[in-house]
Length: 257
Image (cartoon, rainbow, N blue to C red; front, side):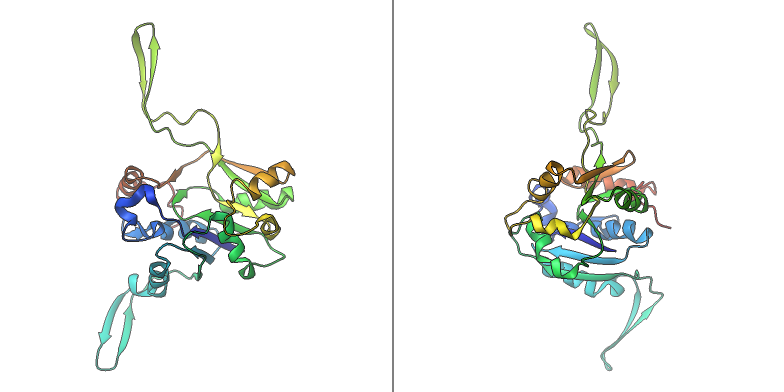
């Protein structure tokens, strides 16, 4: 099964980082966040990736073209124009990077990579800026058991502000980082049938407000509930939080050995 990663947006809310690189290459720890995302899928046996590039997409191509270089010690023989790799641990991934346009919207990016998908097999889809400890294997089984066109991972967003509990004029409790208001949101990590592309008109189609809403009206979109860890990386604060978790050795999304 192929894994499609949307990695072409401008990432304007993280402009401190994305002015010089595409958002999926912003590092958490010493690895780009897209590496973390791909490692989650690879842990579940999915290692055939299609990257929908756009903004500064050439940097994604360069990163994956030199992935072994990034993960190994090397000896460069300038006279022979050769490189010898030592102790390499580059992942066993197959990565296809496709330029889907700088201004193309999420649905349009998927339509542009249609020829790289199999007609008889669903594909996984996620965004290049969020991590979770989601059980991908269980989600795929859930999708197959329902026999619908799409499955979305329904998550509870983390609270962004502390909340005060009050008794009269006195504060009775101060709860930090209250987890949302009970409403679930699309956390990415979708499983879709290729037929969803029939609902995408072109580059200006937004996946979330076009094809997915149509699947809802048709009763063809299931919700796989994920109550574990989930975090996007939309702001510098969120990037710092993820980086701190990784460096502490307590990153919940690190499900691989």
